[in-house]
Length: 229
Image (tube, rainbow, N blue to C red; front, side, top):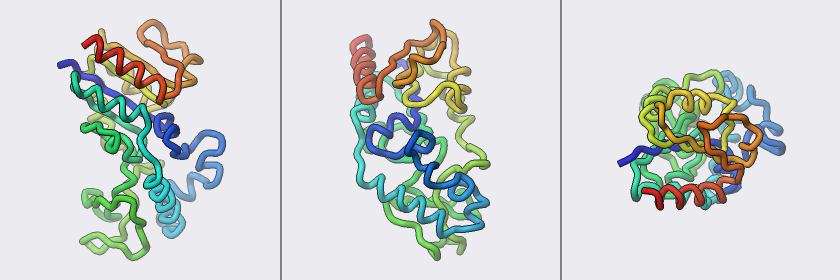
């Protein structure tokens, strides 16, 4: 069975109504990165950081997977599929994909401030000041903040290296880790990029470019690959 590795970024979630961080109107226009997405911010103003992510979690509870998420799950009928996502939402899980690696953490989980291995599933509930882990430490969002290590990046690179097909959705190949994962694929790996702005990139003949929104391009590609299998 051929292996497909799918790398997804903010673009796939945006079509479900999840606000992105860098686009016009995105979250960073309302908050400075250093105020809500660094460990220093956590130490300086925990109430603000908790409120920021509690709002994101409430929003997540109100959105649903889109056609792109649902279509990716269909690939598992005939392929071994691994989704590697830069997103912290749970839309891939809710869309039916069963093998998902989160590079930047998960919104529906909390973890201990003193022991990163103590991770708790909280769903869409708030994390409040005073909520503590079993070691008595305040719970924090299970998010990889700016300046923190990305613990799953080596595992993601191993997965990308084993891929027969690489599909990149809703993220720029000019930005890491997407660029790095694309570079470690084996010779002969088929590569697809689905993003409305993909046509602006000069990636050469190694890539099949689909300059379309994820909700349109992903179902189209999935249909094609299933017919070929």
